[in-house]
Length: 224
Image (cartoon, rainbow, N blue to C red; front, side):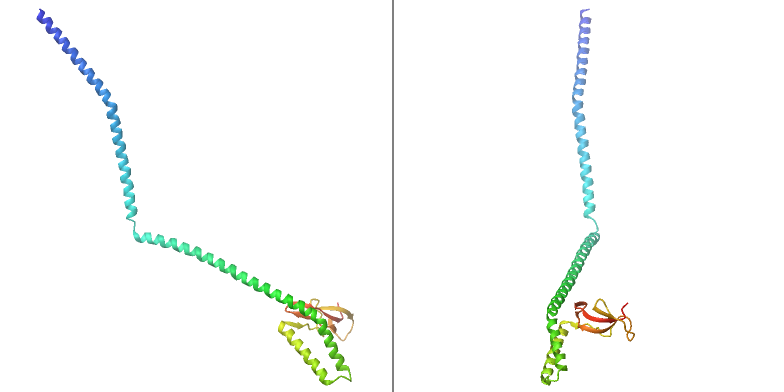
């Protein structure tokens, strides 16, 4: 009977030991599971990184394998665009410079005419007196012919100088009155003449190009 009790006791102890072993194993598995889970996540993440790296390498490989002709075409198109931009810029600069030269030339021309008109305008009273002296010498019986000839030669030289400068007398006598060229100081009614006709010139006018240096002083017949 004691033997049976001993056997039962040993059996119970054995069962208790087995149960304890099972519990310990279970606890160990529970403790190991988080580590295993973390390791698995690391593995998956590493695998994803490798996949991304391989994908990037594939893209790089494809770009490296791009047709060299297409690359050259793109480069050529870019250079052509740059050339067109520089060409357009050069054309604008050339046009601006051309306009600048024209403006400078026009300003110089206007300045020249202004200076000439100013100088000639101051000389005209002397020219008027010289012409009066010639007319007086022609109407005088005591005038030396050689002296008159000399005066006329000097007058011709003056006219030649005026011509070279671009200065010319304004036509007035028997011409239609032009308020832009003539200054009417007398008006008469005369059926022998048409309307607004200059029938007498008291003082000769001069101009240079389209610029009037001095207006002609005239008498006008049959003014409106």
